[in-house]
Length: 283
Length: 283
Image: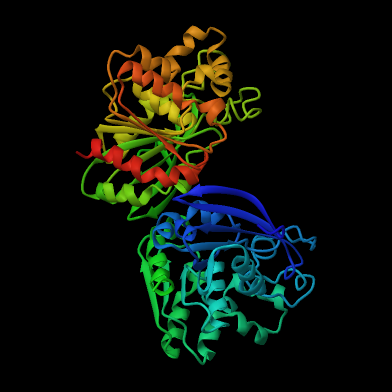
């Protein structure tokens, strides 16, 4: 292990290892944290990499303790990489004052407004610096990347994929914020990170990106619970469906009866998502 | 739902429901909390009940979010019932001062020493009042009960079973405190809850109970990680093995290479334990 990565803890899990790391991020200008599940197949050779982007208030630990993903990732031979949801302890005033913006609410964008612009660069971190570390320090097949996420992180996964067509072989989301420009969570975050000019917001809105895209992504899998308390006001999967229909973007959008927004929902459909990714990543 | 149970939250999960309850406990003299996973099979009829007793610092939520048990419980048709690890907010001086005794450290015993004796009665709660509520309010086959647990709760599961031979059809444990009388965790708790007379401690020590038992329990399944930091000082599975060997108690004690004490370990072997219980409970 390179001194650049500081191992915080590691835990044997389903024949592989869940590990937590900290490092000094050049992109985010300070310490960042992430977690990795390395499946048992990595002892014999490099394995595909699947990134999971978490939602508001989460950390790099949430997915690893709540999602129930390790059993099947160990069976399918997938490495699971989970970044934290923002830089922390940046010294930016009021960074912790609001759970919808600032700490744990990085929205996987590169902020352009100060004081955020120098630290809140989660998009560049997730697509650049983090994969660089993974490729350097872990037995990862960097030509086989997939990405998925939950809520704010579902938005993040879609935007990361839409802004880099051809990069990720597989994409999916649980209860994503489908049209951040049009909902309170996204509007507050985008105003904070990009300022008032909504024209600049479009390049960070998956529905807008799908509309303007010249190429198609691999078929998207999206699950949404019907009893999710954020469904109507914040998530709006109907706008994602509309955009995909208009653009000819393949989408499987599943409405899951009675499920809410949390990890009881995410864990229930985790196996379907892991198989969706494995079909593309391990083929 | 009887007014006696207050539903705190419920979540759809693998076709069933995880629910959290609070109620006024007669046995513990104040509010108690528990969680229940009701599998989908319960829509068609009563299902067996499997109790999980958690370890130090845990709550009734820990197992439900970290153990990854719902997928297979839904497949096998098992109800999972998880009590909190102690009464809380009892007003007993210093109840929160030490993580090894008091709040979240009830040890599943009935304390005899004041000020604990009036409230810390987790044994009677787990074997009596809680099952009474389950049988009354849930679609549970009360003639089909199994019990398991982790660490302090592994001790609890063994002691509950050993003190009521014939009651539980299946018993297992993850990294249990096998001989509380002989280790610091148990000694501190037993001194606090029972006083200095160590003779009285024997009826709460699974190794002692196995030695003195006149009847055998069903075959025990116990998993223990080799990299568990509490293994040598606090858990001592070799004493459980010795007692079982001497008493002719069937025991499968598995040493799991490289695993630690946490839920990454528990979740890895959860399926084996659920199948162990289902074999006895659903036969």
